[in-house]
Length: 271
Image (tube, rainbow, N blue to C red):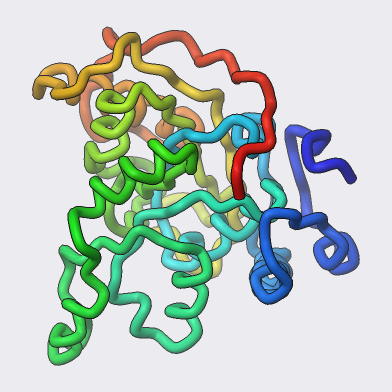
C-alpha cells in the first residue's frame, strides 16, 4: 500500500497488515516497537477517520486532541504514526510517565516533548525531575520542532477528563503556537461509541478517532493579545467538541477562525 494513497478512514487492521505496513521513516528497532504498540491497539482503537489531514507531506501542523483516558496517550499516537509511515508527531507529555518501566522507552523512542510542571507520584520520585527537565521551555522546543518542519501534538485538556459529555476549558498552548508561527491546527476528537451513557469514561472503553480538516488562523501574530489568544483557542476547542461529540466548556469564540486550510502539495519532508 502506498504511503500517500492511504484511505481517509481506517478500521481494524489484521496482524499481518500491521506487520507489513511500510514505515520508511523509522529504523528497524523503532519499526518493531511501533508495530508492537499498534498491534496492542487493535482491540482498543476501533477506527480513525480524516487520515488525509495528517499525511507526512502536510507537516508541520499542531495536532490538538481531547483527553479522556490514560491509555489513549500511547495508542492514538502509535496508530497515527503507523499511518504516517513512521514519521513522528512530537507530543507534549508529562515527564513522570517516563518513570514507568517500558513507558519511558516508548516515550524516548517517540521523541516526546517533556512537560515537567506536575510532580511525580509518589512525591519522593520528584528528586528525579531535573533529569527529565529539558533546557528551555516545552513551548520553545515545540516552536523549534515546527520551525524544522516537524509536527507537534497536544492533548489540550491538560489532564485526563472522564466526563462523557463536557470538555475541560483546555490549555491554550496549541492556539498560542499556531498564532505565533502561522502553522495550522488539526483538531481531533476522541470518541467512545460503546461506553455506557451517563457514567465516567473508563480506560477499558474502545476508542474512535475523528481527525478534522486543518484550521489556519487569519494572520500570524508574533505576540498575540489575550483577546486574540482566547478567541483562537475557543475556535479550536469548538472543533474538538464537534469531533468528540462533547460540549465545549466555555463560550465559542470564532471571530478569528478561518475557513479550513487548504492542504499544501504533498512533499516527502525530512525524517
